[in-house]
Amino acid sequence: MTTETDDELSPQEDTTWFGVFNAECIVIVIINAFTIFAFARKCHLRKRATYLIINLTMADLLVGAVTLPLFIYYPKEIEPGHGFSWRKLICLTFRNVYPLTSQANLCLISLERLHATLYPFRHCLTQKWVYFRIIIGSWSIALLLSCVMAFLDLCVPEVFPYAWASYIVLTLLILTISYTIINYSVKGNPVPHNSGSVVSDRKLSVTLFIVTVVSTLTTLPKAIWLSIPEDIRRLSQLSYAATESVHFTLLGLYLANSMVNPVIYAIRMQEFRKAVKQFTCKRAREPRNVVHAQQENGEVKL
Image 1: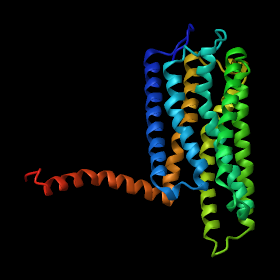
Image 2 (image 1 turned 90 degrees about the horizontal axis):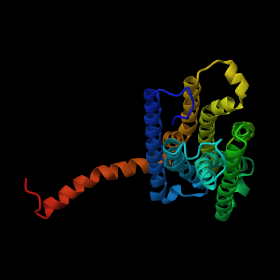
Image 3 (image 1 turned 120 degrees about the vertical axis):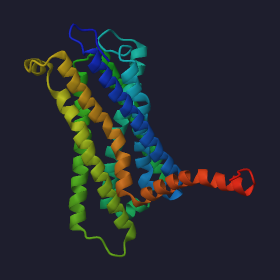
Image 4 (image 1 turned 90 degrees about the vertical axis):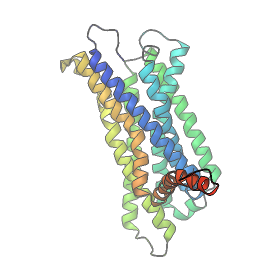
């Protein structure tokens, strides 16, 4: 992950960051794959309220499976500033589309929770096909936006950081406004004791609010860093190695957002905890059941 300049990261630093991003890649893939599997095994978890969560988990999984490997193993293939090529454009598009989709899905979830809070009865009548169209539309828009970002990165690299920072700030602004309105609405409308669905929706809104806060803490530092003009960075007199270390640290923090969401679900969502517990207990019992079956058939002698 070094670039061809006079001042480069030392081999030890390069190896360290290589190991850090590889470890982060593996953790993101495993934890999100496990989350998707838990949702897939339990039909009662696959409902309208969790469609966008499942879609977010899929985007986070692809961040670890595609975005990080492209960043780790093919940096020189897609390094901007050396002319335009379709190969670079495609690689950069697929490297950027999944983080963009993840951020977009957080916005969609906040807007969906806002609709559920302000119009609970109308929200209950929303058909499944509406969610499917929203999901398809979010991926299409993210793909188009990623193409634009890739083109800027190749042809106008000085504009690319501001475009990416603007996207992060816009998504965080949508999240903040949505959950601020939700908070005021919940405080102004006490929950009826006999309204179980409303209580469940509000608990889910709190869970997704926590996801939003964590997302803000992990993505905002990168947006601030990208917003700092290059001239000001030079005035700080940081060496190339120090600048790259800051960049990699903020990038790692930004991508870590893709592995904390399932942890929050596991802590906050009781149904999800039950599904995970049942799956792990079943996997732990399988070897014992095989041994007992073999003992009954006379295949195992004690």
